[in-house]
Image (cartoon, rainbow, N blue to C red; front, side, top):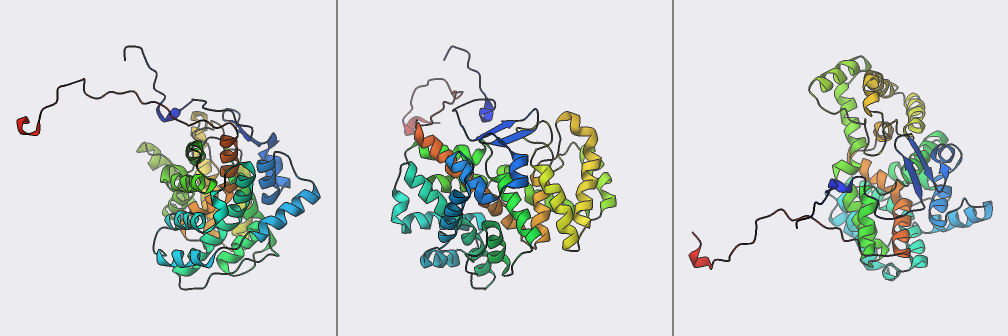
Length: 378
């Protein structure tokens, strides 16, 4: 090839499609879903309402939300055979088990093979309801307990905490989990959403797209930030050590986990809604030191904000999960619970005006050369 080809590694700065779902302004630090500011949605909406907004394009009326919520609660059942499969691989990482369980659902539910927008919406609703059940069931089974059955009287977030812990959450704890899901629900052409669209581009079914998304999210460069932040907080230990920790990291030219983002140059707009929640939950749980450590790191990192190293949403998420006593290897699966509606609508949008996603790579291997039979190779 003689012409000059510009390589955009990681497809950075490349627009591959139009999308009417989320709008991210990284320079201004703004995020909206369907034109609604993430701040308004996180303050006033529920996860169920945001799911409806993402999938259907508009905020629901009271009647529409009631119908959607009822359908979501009714879809929480999982075929018994899936629990057997979870038991068979219970010692695996929760993301591997979750991916396997979703694949099993595809094999056990004949409707999973249907394509088309109506089928994607129906199957997306089922998967959104089922994924928390699968994660909580695995946590119970690997600890020698029977899975806790879903409670149809509880919201999506409250039911998740109920199934995971076997006790009804407080109103504040359930609301904080709800906000966490809202903030993670959709985020443009992130790695897992893009991967799901590549799969749907081949005319695969929705379950196939979600399995691809789960596989991609499992990579620590995409979904592992919350777990890494919690490891950092434990390493720091006490609030008074935060400044020295940051100083040592910067001196060694090492990244401080939870700061910086591939898209945002200012503070991640989602972070503020988790900050106050961490403070309140820490006080409720009798462990305010975790919040104090986080804020000590934030204070020490202020001089680097001008370089785009601002706090991101995952900086606070890990501590919330820690306060609930949730094992660290469940942090990424929790991310998946919130991201389900985003993956579903990304798959739907890909299908609406489908094209096989097939980028190019620029060959830089050996020049053409002659073939030698094996006996003549030195």
